[in-house]
Image (tube, rainbow, N blue to C red; front, side):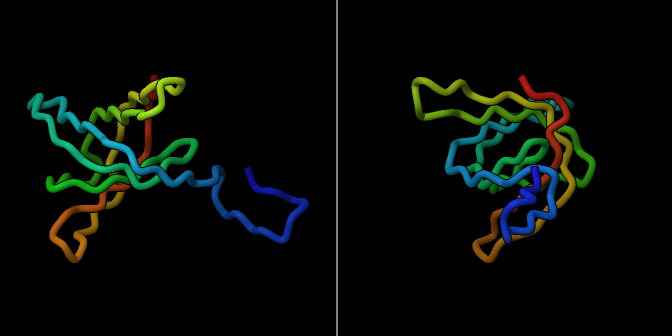
Length: 101
């Protein structure tokens, strides 16, 4: 949440946490599985890079692994909100996590 006591002005509802974690992406309509790399998480969103291009408003299932034994992996239903192609030909996918388990 935004901090009122600091000079820091966060314009989002949740602060982004930068992550470098493996992401398994499943298209529930085809059951096809893709791999990606997590970039950041927030309270209701995520961003990752992958070789696959997805469409705006497309629903996906995400599994974000934790390399720490004391942290559980994150499983979420995800809706694509932004797709940008990077200079190396990959796709940066950002969106909203609808149901986190």
